[in-house]
Length: 203
Image (cartoon, rainbow, N blue to C red; front, side, top):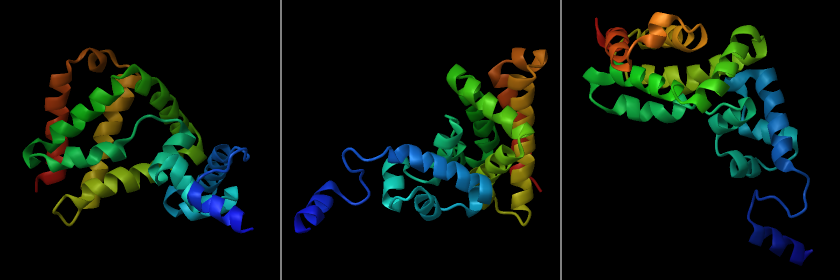
């Protein structure tokens, strides 16, 4: 018994045992069920671990945090939550352009565009995916943008920004409207960036 405890301590809390059942796959299945039933906001690492029958530390070992886990469940390489700090920490008068350029640069990557386009189409047609994606974007993107805006209607402003970004993505990458597809990146950054900037900071 003592030897078993010592072996567990050397292995480290939350690390998988050699020869154990594929805990990573169990966690993904449990996370998918938890996210679908309770939504992104209400789902917790502890609840997912309990559903999978593992220690919460094992979830962190494989996936890091909740945004990482959702990205793994959805198979999406698009992680706006990771880009937000850099977008918001620069000069305030260039925030709108930075946001638009980030979106264009990310979606112009063929790997990201292909997989994220599939996810977005699913989100537009499948209620369970819609709730997951909306919850993720609200908490990890829009709420963080709103927190940087000094205005009573900061949440509305962040939501208005999302309408511009969603329109750009759908028009340029999903519907492939010729004028948007052919437009130079700098032109889109300047023109759409002006609108995003106005939403965020103008009276």
